[in-house]
Length: 448
Image 1: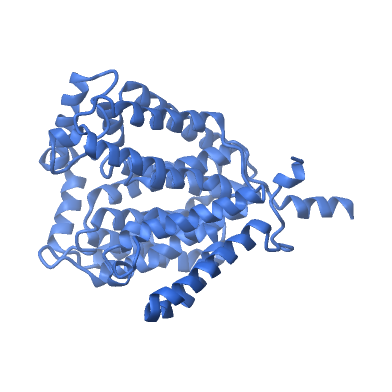
Image 2: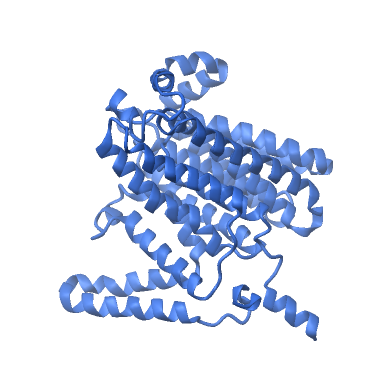
């Protein structure tokens, strides 16, 4: 296969490729068959077809939604779908990746990242032989090798240029807007906290969107004011949701990222502080539910005491019971559910890996994370300030660091698809997988 076959196509001269044409024909054929079989239900097929075409042309929007689709699953429209929303988006994302594979638009997977995912996957499968929760462990393994693995592999098919990274960040903010509106529309009846019972995921997405807006506005003065206003709104809603982890992770991530940025570009401090002050000034005027205000303020006053009063304190103790009993190979995938059948996982990625998959999986994943953090810092400091790529790397660093903090207090190995997706994108960027511009355009410019 020639090098030209692997090159991404120019956006200015894009044509429908063979794989995309086959995909469109398949969707049209399925729609026709459904019209005959489904009767009146088939009236929704044109809208579904338009959505499928949109995601085919904007796969980064599809990926951004796929990573957080769980936040919409309790909505009536989503629940009324004939198929599971995650499955539907996953199938569409797999079809898009398949079309990219047929047309040769695939980026090389860095060896270090491939090793990390291989170790985790093999540990999941192997530990089924000795786990005490075989049924749940099998379900957990299957989900990782399908739903989560799609989030891990998709970036290597969808990201080709630095502009794609910027578009992905933009779509993440776009997806956060309806999530914020839904949080306002569905407060908990008992506690008054926004977002009802879906608090952690909602707060995480809103804080990530606020980070993108704050850091993205640093180099673009034209959008600084609207970005600051929208970021302040996201932060205020996230505070109203009342989950302490995302709010504290937001503050720490912003501090770490700005420290790294300002050490290299000190004159950025004024606009940064202006945006942060706007956000902090808005929050006191927002009427937070009593439980939300108390949870956040108690964590800020005495984080150690707040942790000891939290249920996660006991989950950590239960996880270390498994670690002490099986320090090398782990107790097996899903084994924590045998210790705590209600919660089922320790709400900490590292404890989950160690207690269930063993020390090898823990060390490999931790090593991969360290490589990414060091690499992103070095890449950000090495890139020229005025090229645009440096700003994108700082935003990527913030998103990855935030997700890294988030997986230590919530979710399990499959719930945290956004963490695995950001790990994949970070490895792709560090491996030099993104081109500054379309190779076809660059080649044309050099031959004129």
